[in-house]
Length: 379
Image 1 (spheres, one colour):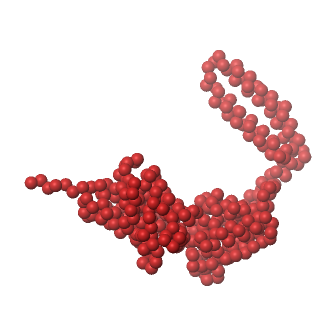
Image 2: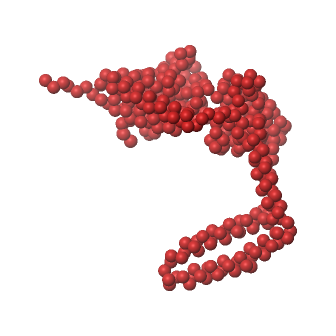
């Protein structure tokens, strides 16, 4: 640790102690002598330690050097963010440390969300292993690499990822700088930085959620009372297409049985998912047992929804980019009537927290409709 860093830590500790002294003004009058002694001790510390250290650093020029270093770091951060090429800084495990504005526009992921998450989570499953292997090789010092990958936001267009080793500052480990270069056709189709109007988009999404709730309420009221399977099928029909690419409905709790699977029109995996045993789907089993909903964006574990009869991962085969798995229960910690799982795939936007909240509300309404019995008419 440099003398400047040590001085900064000592000064920060002093400021914290001064704040504690300010809060001690409310102590009883009999204890003010102790507080006064502590304040005098802190003043003596400033006169004997902090001020001489400050003068010594100023004379040696280290203060100016530290200020220049901070200005240089701010300049470099600004250059990184404003660079026109999509760039991300990752570690050897592909975990994102920084992502510039152009990269957020290309991937469709905000920098605040991406930081701390693996960059492989934004790629198709088929490209994740190769990208992770090449990143580790670059971090080991085996030279720069370049490979084609496919983003989940635009799976049909290859993106050239160039990897180069970088040692940020005095850090002990090597980081990897990733430059994402879209193909010429892709660059012409969409700008490098997108700027949708947030207010209008938010209003549109809110209106769509209200329309969805209205359609669900209408379907549940029109469903025959006492027929839980018909209620579940009607609810799945409302959600399919307009809200989710895949809707998988499982009835029961102790003994789950798959009742409905609605997928894309051209998806050959629908019969295999329908024939799948819900007990082999960890997400479904967890929701049925614990009664807790699950929202996953770019799920890392391909086994989360089990495998089909051919042994293929359902999430990989369905090209799932985000999922919602909710138990159907009328109240918190109440009996579970079933489990509803929703998939989105391809370039469709991932499920948001607001959409997850909407599905959670609808799940309680569905459970109430499934438990509704036929009342005898009065004679």
